[in-house]
Amino acid sequence: MELLEQYIREKGVVKEGNVLKVDSFLNHQMDVHLFSEMGREWKRLFADAPINKILTIEASGIGIACIAAQMFEVPVVFAKKAQSINIDGEVYASKVESFTHKRVYDVIVSKKFLSPEDHILVIDDFLANGCAVNGLIDIIEASGATLEGVGIAVEKGFQEGGKLLRERGVRLESLAIVDAMDAKTGELTFRH
Ligand code: 5GP
Image (cartoon, rainbow, N blue to C red; front, side, top):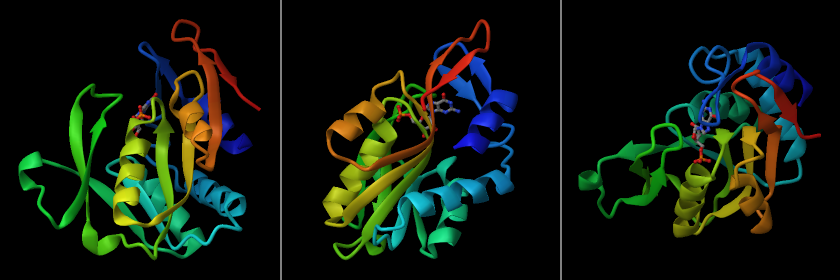
């Protein structure tokens, strides 16, 4: 998606450790005009899918998922980060290893909000190794709902998450794929 690539080129900052900082428009300050265009693009890409719910993960997926949900006219459910101690039979739970914080945490979704009748689009801001998305897919599978696809804002194509999802046959639509980035020069290469 041209507009997102333009934002990344102009406002993104490449950090050491394969981290792309986009906090001026995507996951701290949020550019809602950009989010609307992203939502419209996912709606176009998934026009044929019978999506009735969007699933994301707190915190940074929530903003983009909500704006996308306006385009799809469906509710958004976000998986919550929880203490293991609070996990009971009322929730679906999975473990996710945080790419940016390097620790494992539990994510939960109440059983009230996912059922076998649901057709889910997963939305998140970044795809790196795929831990966050895989945790959400585990939860969808446990609920008996159908995974219709995954919409990602920025996929880092040099990490393995996207490749593994595509190999599993998951319908993955990343709006920008960064194939290489250099923290020293700030140079970014996009996949087209
Ligand atoms: P994964 O679970 O695919 O390894 O990593 C995805 C999650 O880690 C996303 O939810 C995102 O919050 C965070 N993340 C991964 N890579 C980056 C990055 O380069 N920049 C930022 N800002 N977040 C990232």
